[in-house]
Each structure stands twice: as structure tokens, then as C-alpha cells.
Image 1 (cartoon, rainbow, N blue to C red):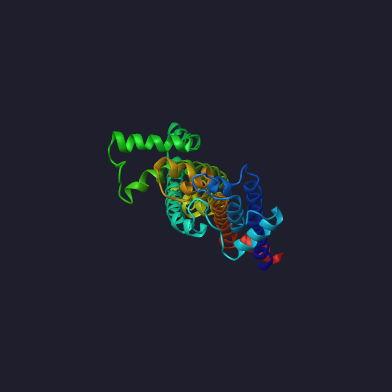
Image 2: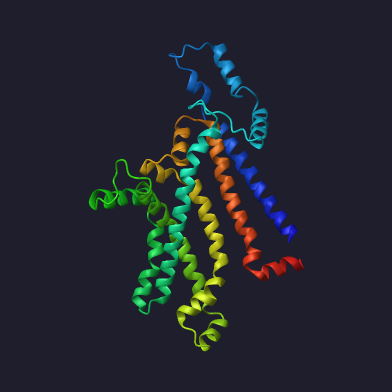
Length: 313
């Protein structure tokens, strides 16, 4: 068991290192010099010597290896560098913009899970074949809808047609209603598909007829015996999707004009703010890795057979 936990922690650290290194190489390969883009403006009246001093202050004058090692050490000590555009530490920008994105991701994931469970329940409790087929087609429809189009359509329907959600100066929860739906609908599709597939597979196992022979209804069989046996595959996909939610907030936050990690990413890309982009990549990778590490560590807890297997190994 201890070896299993250590191996998962080792894999998590390797993924973080790989994400940091790949993003560093790609960002350093961008054309142009972010410092010069910011300060080489005739209006500033800076001399070449002053520009060189500024590049040195930002650590942009060293060799590639020197910059990489400096960046690694800085991140290990909690120093994410300074934003060229804002002139403040990148960590302060993350502290301001990350909480709204985390809230949006958490609420969106909760709604997506609820939608997926409702679809699976409605599909398996429906006695009509045509209705079951219709419900089974919902996840395919959800997953094929582009996020930006869904957001625009929700604004058109709920704000302009029904006038239920104000577009200008909405309340704190009113402003989150449509973005939550926008991120929840596409995410609910793969969850529902995995649920439906695993429920159908578990229903073919021998213990299901035994449970029915004891007089349990179809609904009780699903709740007491089938649900817990479909949990692990769904948990795996759920961990991946939640990590993806945090890392892919750019489109939703741009459509709805939210101040979050997505808007900060867009601004950093537009201005080639390398320090901020690097910090965003590392934070997103960390969220993704931590969530999936928690899922991996929960496996032996949720499935005693795996715990016994690990103990025997």
C-alpha cells in the first residue's frame, strides 16, 4: 500500500515537472521579446542601456539553461515572477483571479454530475423503449455542442427572450447561473455516457437476478447494488473532467465577461506576459494532478478488492 501511494506521488511530481518544462520551452520559443514589446516604445524614451538593465532585472538576458534553472528554483520557493503588463507579482494576479474560476468549476461540475445522474436514472427507469432511446441520445447531443455557441444561445434565451437573467450588472449568483450551465452541459455528456454504459454492464452480472429474486424492485436494485459497482469508472472520468474544467475556463469566461483565470490567460497571451502564462500553466497542471491523485488514492478505499490486491503485492 505504501509503495502504491509513493508511486502515485512520484507520477504526480513527474507530470508537474513535465508540464512546467514543456510550457517553459514553448513560451521561450515565442517570437519576439516580451520585455522589448512592453518597453521599447518611443514614448518611454528609454536608452539601449536602460532597456538592457530592464531585461536583466526580469532575468531575460541569461542563457536558456540559466533562465530555466532560475525559473525552477523560483517556482519551488513560491516566486512566480512579475507580470510585465501589470507590474505586480504574478502570484497576486492568480490570488485575485483564481477563486472565481474555482467556484465556477466546482459549481459547474456539481450541476454536470446532477444532470448525468438524472439522465442515467430516467433512462433506466423508463419503461418505454422509444423514450429510453431518446434519453440515451441526449449525451451525444450535449457533447457535440460548442461551448461558445451554447453560452451565446443561453444569453439569447434567458437574458433577451425570457428576461430572467440581466445582462448588465447581474447579481453575484445571477451572473453565475448561465456560465455554470455553459460549462455543465458539455461535461455532463461523458459522465452520463460512462454511467449508462457501466449500468448496462453491471446489470448483466449474476448478483442482479439474485437481488431481484429476493423481491427487490428495479429501482432498489439500481440503488443498492448497481450504483456502487459503477462508481470507480465514473470517478476516474470525473477527476479528469474536473481538472479539465479548471484548465479550460478561457472560452466561458470570455463569453460572459467574467474576471477569472480565463480572462487573465487571454490578457497574458495578448501581451506575451510569460511569467503570468507560466504561472497559469503550473497552477492548472497542479489542480489537474492533485484531483487525479486524490481519485487514485481513493480507489483502495472504495474498492476493498483493490486494497487486498495491493496488500498481497
